Image (cartoon, rainbow, N blue to C red; front, side):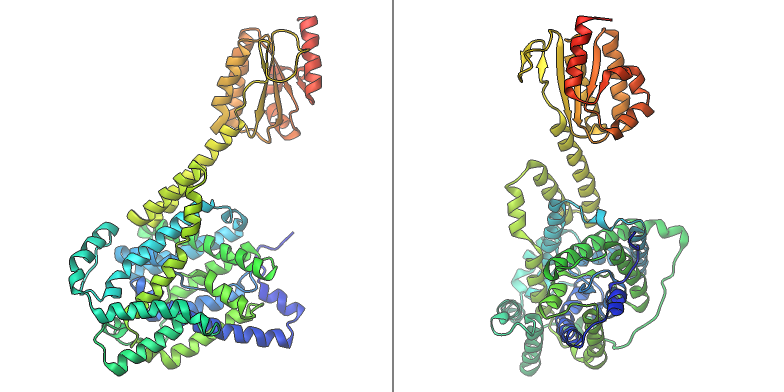
Length: 547
């Protein structure tokens, strides 16, 4: 039996890491640290918190997730997916509310891991994930227009529609320098990989744009003009927690936990495919939980596994958690020695980087592909997307999960409902040797609450036209209590009309449930056969010698 919590680093240290791999991990960690620097700052600023909180998160959470996690190569830290959630929490509950929500989310993630829900979270429907990921991308893009155009807007409305109304009404006051910086940043970020793949385009853009702005004294807003100095120290503080008010943070905490859990496990699955490995999902969730409990105490924000940084780690030769630890230490050194220079970064430059992040997050190809598919998938996709953009990510996830579940049950019920094989001499298959008055009906799929009433109604309708009804149950994997209740009522109705019921091909698990609820005694043990041929033979025997 696998252990619930078994960090990959511990396993690898026991088996040994060779010198060549260690050097490769250290190099990969340094590269990922450089990649993470502009993203950590940009994600924090976009989330409505000060830049150092992003750096602290990348350092503390990044270290813990690599040190305790269940993946060889997972890189943890702040991610774009959390921007919308964190911004909303800060606006409604303040920084203390954000800290409490994040720590509660950490506890929830640990519980997910201890309850072995790691595998379950990986089964979130693809349209649901694409829907809220694309929605987040649109929201991130919309939050960056102010800085991208250098618009002199003091306070932006939180609603998506109202935000764009304000943008258009202030478009005439756009700063042409800010627009130019945004465009150049986007171009450098996208096309620098044609020159070098070792140094990330976002890092090149930040260094180049910041130098040009300072040397040429270009009049644009910078991090300093918004946030002042960026401290290069850690603070240790606990929020003022009022136990009677903890319930108000349950919804945002659950959103952080669900999104963080799903994103980290998706990242780990992608990484597994790149290195032909296998992560430990429950260990990963527990490590994510610990990281989200500890990081806010040091002044950080919510963290999870980052797909882009994890992929960068793998591409640069990282194969053990040491790379993730080195990435955290690299950022720590940068924070100690270069934090004072980060304040000079233009806000338009960060906006350009985040616009590229939003584009990469949008998954527009997957979005279009799903729109060409099943109506059920389209409903889940568009509902989740529109709720994320126009209402709230928390609501989008909650409704998306419920809607996906309901539609899944509807599809399962529809798949199972079959037309009868033979009713009153109307042959749909070759059962020409069956006596008159014998009908056949097949149930295919689970017999559960979503399909139980429909099944019972169809069977009752067929049965009342017959003397004997054979129900084939070879493809019924399970039954639930609702189905059994409806099944019993249907049997009683048919028996009142002197209709004999036979069951064939009932599997052992379903048979146990039928016995437990006394359905077998209601039908009669002699009328429950293990094969269809035996059921047909029994039906012929009944018609020849009626009781």
